[in-house]
Amino acid sequence: MNQSIQSQDKRLTDSLPQEHPLESLLLELRQREQSPGNLFATNVMNALEAIWEYRARSLLMMLGMMIGVASVIGGITLGQGVGTFLDNSILSQGTTTIQVQEQFKASGGAGTKQPQPLSHRDLQSLGNLPHVAAASPVIQMAGGRPLIYGNKNWQPNSMEAVSTGFQTIQNWQVAQGFWFSQAQQTSGDRVVVLGSTTVQHLFGSSVSNPVGKQVQISGQIFRIVGVLASKGGFDLDDVVFMPYTTAVMRVLQGTNNSFFEIDVSADTVGNIDQVVQEITFALDGNHHIAVNGLADFQTITAQQQIQQEDQSVMVIGGALLGVAAISLVVAGVGIMNIMLVSVTERTREIGIRISVGARRRDIRNQFLIEALFQCLPGGLAGMLLGVVVGWLLIRVIINAAAGVSISGSIPFSITPAILIVPFVVSAGFGLIFGLYPAIRASRLDPIIALRRTK
Image 1 (spheres, rainbow, N blue to C red):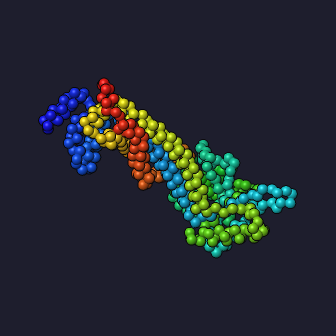
Image 2 (cartoon, helix red, strand yellow):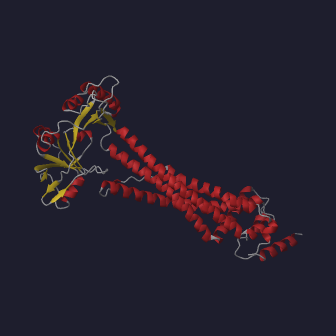
């Protein structure tokens, strides 16, 4: 009896084309009564044989999954990187900083009280609050005021008139020279402090230490007293600071005695909320704001700025992930189509397996394992590609927005999501989109399948 079964097995094996992966078929049947672990190992071995046999098709499936996963990981990396960079840029301006800005009310008719701008009186009131470490006005010197040095000129991104306390408030470090003094501020001296990017564009490599050099602003000569250390944010280093008294007396010539913004630094992070309440109470009194009335100013803390930026990044990240999800679905449909083609081309192989005793679930499991093993490498490659592409996009976007190369400050972090998502997505899509072809293969009629010629 055993000899007849063995001779029948030999005749069936010899009658098959050698390129079909059926060499382990008889071994599978002999191990039918073994443990589920051995049976699973046999299915895995059969799946790997089929993947190698049809390696060109398998490569296409891996490529489709790689592109889909790379889109998702690239979107996650881009969103996290830009968000981290924006948060760091905000925090670099001081974790205890509170910005007080004008907030003009809409006109309600002839009887509506006109809003009051921030004044020197408001500056003095805020500086005298008990938990305020420093207060500084901020006057934006807009309107085409380039710096001129010899035959070179440069229009900085920002030119601001501030007080001596501004250095402490926004945590500026001086790399060369010093910040302007209280005496220079009181007398309105023509002195400026330049950011590192401004120095780079104005002097290049020709001047190693610009402290003491003279530049021309609005037809007046200013002396450089300090160069700031780089913060590496969006245009934060392309800046010029001068005493606000100098701006009022010499540049603006008394045409602007109010401030668009007053920056305040709380003495500790824990007192920020209390300082905000004290600022509101003080300015309500100065501006004669009624109880529960609409204020003509607003306070913005660093934490509020971070929350606003995070919401914006979240919206953009959601849009990117939506586009990536579409590419994943397309990849999944491609996987299903390739698996269906594979089932069609291997119909005779499936019929022989079923006819010699392979259970339908064995056929189904083999095709599912094939889909899984072809998607997982694609997911891993997609993770690596997505991280690289995402980091490059972060670099391009940040450098383009900043106008200078700041690649050393570009954040790069590997989060659990980046490590987990590729495997979950590739395994899930392999099983979902490979299930229908696997079920279709397992339900083939062996009689009809055996009639199919090569």
